[in-house]
Amino acid sequence: MNAQTLTAPLDGFSKLPLPKQIGLLAGIAISIALGIWVALWAQQPEMAPLYTRMSDRDVAEVAAQLDSMGVKYRLDPATGAVLVPKKELYRIRLKLASQGLPKSTNPGFELLEKDQGLGTSRLKELAIHQRALEGELARTISSITSIESARVHLALPKDSVFVRKRSKPSASVLVNLYAGRMLTEDQLAGIVNLVASSVPGLEPEQVSVVDQRGRLLTPQRDDSQTRLGDKRLELQQRLEREYRQRILDILTPLLGKDRVRAQVVADVDYTVVEETAEIYDPQKQALRSEQVAEDERREPGVEGVPGALTNQPPAAGRALPPGQQAPQTEAEAVNQPVSRSSRATRNYEIDRTIRHVRQVPGTLRRLSVAVVVDYRQAVDEEGKPVQQPLSQEELDRINTLVREAVGFDARRGDTVNVVNAPFQPPEKVEP
Image 1: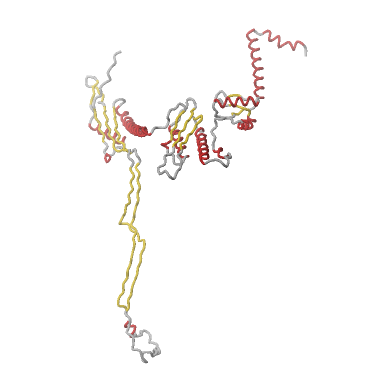
Image 2: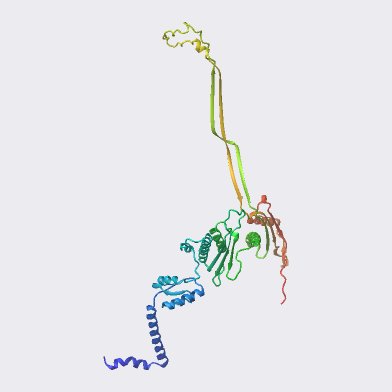
């Protein structure tokens, strides 16, 4: 290879314009830097989160302990979690656990596994069990989406045979939510029922949930009736909107847009009715048991006088000709039945039907519908626009359509009124 071949690329590079020379050098530099970064990144160990949920104080203490241990770590900028080499994850956790880190982890039933000693009092045992139960509940609640951490406080009354009226247990839950997150009504109800189901005798009404800002999330007792009334009113308004929209959907294509107005009033029954009926049908009977008894009484015959003639053996029998019956003896003639009776006891099962009906609250009791239809737009003989009322046949047809749309029921007392009246034109707003 001669010198001319080696200097050919340099000669070609020197012949390029200055901007192209700068761009080529910059591309080469970027490629070299990218290659170095890839090589360094490939040499870095795979990182894994040490703990997913820790307070800022625990993060600082864990970071200081990792520095003293000489462990390389980094903080995740998105979640704030401490990332350590995945191969050393469990070794680091065991080392930190021996140092009591992290401190904010709620202890659970592992507290019961510790040796309490022989001199442990009953009061201390109850306190340890209550603390373990609070920790387990806090762990479970913290696993719910939108909750960063949680604490649970239980107020459990003491059992006593001398107290007739025992106070009810209660619970308080403090939830620390992630930034920008909120608990839905279903999640809040789930937390309340979770705590109430975990403590014997605890009712859901005795559970209070508070967030990190001190806001009470569970409804107060006085507000329960108010919220129930709001839900009932919301249900009634939703039914009225649905019926009103049905009327508009069926009449607008026939009459035109903005030429019909409808209002619906729904009378909703929110009472809970439970009915138990026991019905007997005498026409349908079935024989359950039967007892039949028959009695036949005979009078005893007259016996002979004791003596030699009476004790004589009977005479030898003689064969009778075919077709001839033996004559009755005197004893047989005397021992004829004089009375015969029969008794029958029959038990019948009457057909019975037991029906238990529970009416769900929110049943539609009555429906009132009012519909106003605009006059028809027409043109008179002079070509001027005029308004003409609809015929009675057209109004009857509209009335029929409205009744079918809302499910009219005369037995329920529903009413439908259709009125034909001219609509006033909208007022013009002067600029």
